[in-house]
Length: 441
Image (cartoon, rainbow, N blue to C red):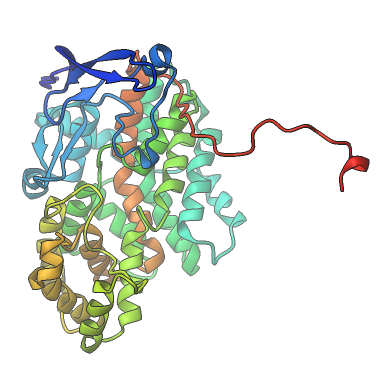
């Protein structure tokens, strides 16, 4: 590999903290990464001062050192191993992006061929897992099935759970990337009562996923190349996103030494939340609530009212204070899919486009930088492709698996990593005297 990584390094700069009560001064080194803001090294803060920081949501706290993904929210920049997401979405494919995230550089032709071969031949699930699905109710949310089935992989593939063995880690990584579309498609088929469709080795990753989702034994399924390319691009855009909630969950679970399948299951559970991976579901539910494009002005007015609890879903982003670079690509992909399927006049999609136009031009949204984000467009694309609402977050999980796996591997190989153990600001009762039951009023 030829990855060019600049490790973090301490400069001669320090930051001095002063305790106003005692006048004592404490100095802490400043560390620089390869790009992005410098950070204050507070690893010895508690040891040296007796204090620790209070940072709900970790908005100002770096939990780890990573060379995988970089985000500049103010500039609207997203890099995978240094490569802009726009370049990867336009010129690459998902398998190449997976290789990049795992190994640190783009593959040559032979490396790519071998990687695709190895992933393809891991897509089958243990046949006994076919029966495992029967334990779920048919109306189970597919994400509940995903959490259960992925967590159970360690019971079926216990030959790759030794996290100290690099080969075990590699096999487990390949298995999860390869099997996740199969697990996801089977969750969908189980919910609608159709037979499971097995993967086909002659198909590419995204083609195989579409085939397993929509094929049935009664007739051949013809893969639409526009939809396959759109899905591949969606997977690239969602593959990793720095230390988000689900990735942090994977790292936190992994810091205890848990097996990789358990860690990824924990990540899926975190992703399920409506503030994270469930945001694209929330977009469609919002559109259904609005109901008709004639009501868009009414709901836009409500969104501007600080006293109204209604919020427009799919606009703005916690990290990006500029246009989400993924949203630009997703917007283009959205229009390609709608044109290919000829569904621009579908009422719900017309409503979405009307809302998009207002948000892009309205001074209120522009001033607050509430641009349509990646979740807004992905929900519209999935709806147009015939993917049910309950599967939206599942597709996100399929894409994000490679990011989770890459982050988990990086954490395991980091000699400075410790078991995650956040501190707390305790605000409960102070020490109290225990009274026997008979003495209590």
